[in-house]
Image (tube, rainbow, N blue to C red; front, side, top):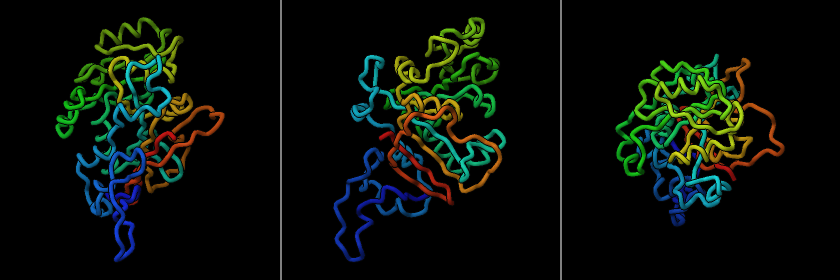
Length: 296
């Protein structure tokens, strides 16, 4: 793996020239040029600590630029990032699963993003298609999570209207951190009762049958989950983007062509005006591009 962007200032001076002072990186990049150093441009395996530093959530004091931070709806600053993979031709999955588009480095980053998050937000259909299980404890992140006041493993938060889920699965019966159900106040009462009986915590983020995506960050922040990660699927991610609550997009571009009729990484009605995101970083390995974009 090597860094393509931002390029440390130290490395862009001409041969024999005086290198500019280091310590300046792209805003929100999560690292400094001096920390990047020449080794970042060398194709090598990054350690989990290096990846965790590169993908670190913004500090609470750095969130003042977000429109939701400090609003009356929020009890604490919150950051919602997404992690998705796409083929070169825009497919979000192949035959219903994202694994055929992934690679070992992508899965390492997947694990790092989970290792940094308080909660992983995912749609019910993705839970069913991908066979979601509870997030596991990873020793590599134990000290980092403890220092940040986090539980040993992130909670999985499932967004669902009808609660059409199998509550006998390990996601509900074996989680280290109780699984969360995000639904609307009008959800079927008997299914809400079944979810709670299975050990899930049910949170209401909407007045009707389903969830209001704009309310999800505030509801989770109210329970102490402020470092949020969503893994889709495309419908849920599209809803978050359209609601204006998506702060960061971690997108892996796979060097493959899938064709077929798979959806894009986001689906749903068009937004009135396309929202601009700024490039924060790009890593590369074996042709895979691991990009991060932050809301401008």
